[in-house]
Structures are given as C-alpha cells and as structure tokens.
Length: 116
Image: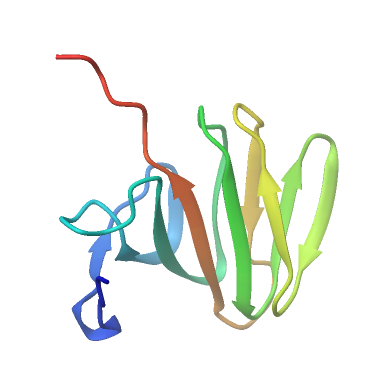
C-alpha cells in the first residue's frame, strides 16, 4: 500500500490550461498505481482547458463548484459529485463559468510506453 498525504502533493502544469492549479495526488512514483494517475485541479472562475484532445480517455469528477464540459457537440454543466468520461481523441473544452472555484478530481491513464 502506498499512502500519499495531500500535504505532499506536487503541483504540475497541464498544457492548454488556464486559471488552474493542478496537484498530482497519485501516479508516476515507485509503488504507485500502474495503470493511471490521479490529479486534483482547482479552477478559478473563468479558468478552463482546451479545446483540445488527448490520445487517451479522461474521467472528471467535480467535488465542489460547477464545470461546463463541451464535447461531441454537447454541453453539460457538472455539479458536486457529477462526473463524465471523455473518450480518446474526443475534442473537449472545460470552462468554469461560475463565480466559485471548481475543485475536480481527474483520472488519466499513463501514456503508452515507448520501446527502448
């Protein structure tokens, strides 16, 4: 078992994100998860990400606040404890259109390993 304390979480910069502080809660460490990593994002009002896509799926879980997710010609507002899955290659944009910080958990698989 690997226990990681929130006080030890390290910040990370995510490409094409704005108005956000991201912390890596689990992943990319010895003894950690082998299939995915877990992030915690705090989006300021007006903050967001995209539009862009990645070659792997993502799961978003809103813990507090609201996040508008735009993907596949659809728009949905996620509130507390709502979640969504973004498919590999699906273009998505997320925007905090509210006046409160949106706190989210993000689960993303590791990128494929490149043969040596």
